[in-house]
Length: 279
Image 1 (cartoon, rainbow, N blue to C red):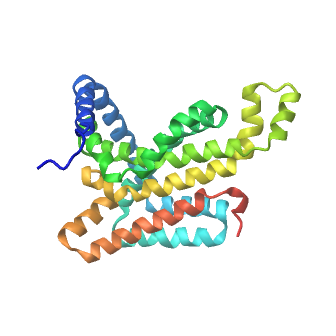
Image 2: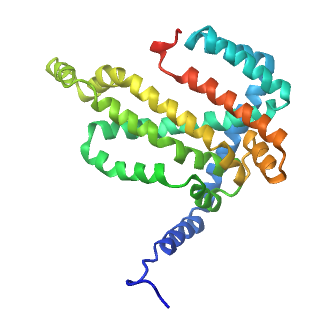
Image 3: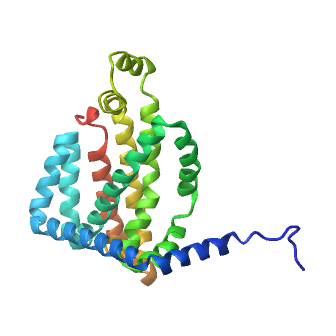
């Protein structure tokens, strides 16, 4: 017996046909993107490991001290040293490289979109429901089209992470620009500022704390996708967590989870607003 009062709309079938169309006609294009993403992440891993663990720990401890003071610097020093001692350094560098790549691309894509949304009401009304969809869709769903378009491995993990992490950057860039006091904008216009001068000399500098808050949230969301990305073959600490779950290894799960937490707290504190960097 059919319980539907109305004919079912074949929405899922339409999406499936759309993904198949893109896969069949642009397979080479997406293959090049996958190769480029994987190559860039591997290049970062090689660069971080070339620095050596001691050099990396010293470098990020210095950055943490410059950004937030002694407390965060000490946490960074002890946390990274613990990751090295537990034997997860290589996987941690893979995770770190994946997050850095995803966040950088999220900023490169999201910042211009947020700026456009901040100065154009029509574009804002278009992109807002799209951001609502991206932020409420279960993260696992992003993996399905990513596998079809990019195969398995690092690339679909990076793409899914970008999609999952980009909304806060767009939203808070838009919000920051719209929260700039109107009298300051009018003052800049009265002095003959062009649209670009008004944007880069007034709106963006004043909205930078809000924009940085959006980037900070994108970093946290990117790290939260690490374990999910491991389901499609992305290496790193997420693969360790996934292995621990499937093999019921509490020891590996706890150690890899602690390593992810250390990286998350370190990046969170370092990426927070510089006005409060001194404790």
